Amino acid sequence: MNEMVHFADHAAPAVVSAQKETGRTNDPARTMAEILQVATHEFADKGLTGARIDEIAAATRTSKRMIYYYFGSKDGLYLAVLEEAYRRMREIESDLHLDDLPPMEALQKLVEFTYDHHRDNEDFIRLVMNENIQRGDYLRQSQSIQQLNSNAIQSVRAVYDRGVAQGVFRAGLDPVDIHSAISAFTFFNVSNRHTFGVIFQERASQDKADTLKREHVVELIQRFVSHRISA
Image: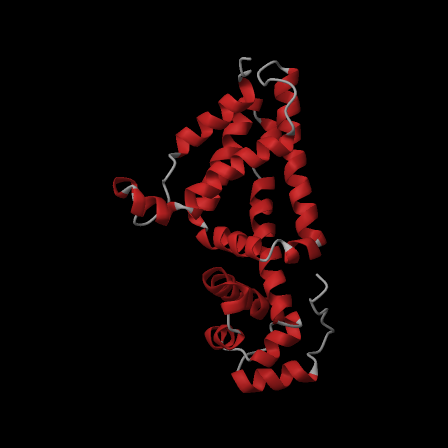
């Protein structure tokens, strides 16, 4: 990450001074992780414009000066939050061992993981919604996010190609379209749950998003991939 500082064996004077102000010990990795955790919710809740660095500093017992030292700027912190959010998701996704499963079961596991991740991480959905307001400008700056998502498409491609070869998936689909379909259903399930719940009150969810049922999303994607559409 361009904004991230590489640390020497001893803390820089600015960090030492900031640590004296806040009473924190020299543990940059832990401090940065705490800042990212709090900043994730702050940016998800208020967007890039509305988020306040001083509130993040207060919640993490750091100083604005220390945050700027670690991340360079508010924009740098926002980009770091985006990168960490995508990294966590793709890291877990890479541990699903989809290659060890038959294609249809692998697809089901991928859809279920994506559904569960989005449902349980509303901050991630709100971050993506906010970044769309920014027209993807910050994602465009990040090489790591682009590589992570490229790897995700390759994972879908591997499952799909095996399914086509075994005759369980229909040929002629683009793995990006499959990925987009999975994202569309699982993203909408969280992003629109409040408005959907107001309009269709009997479908309102108080805790976790269930605008679309998990098993229904799995079936929709499996049918999309495995059934040829009649002319």
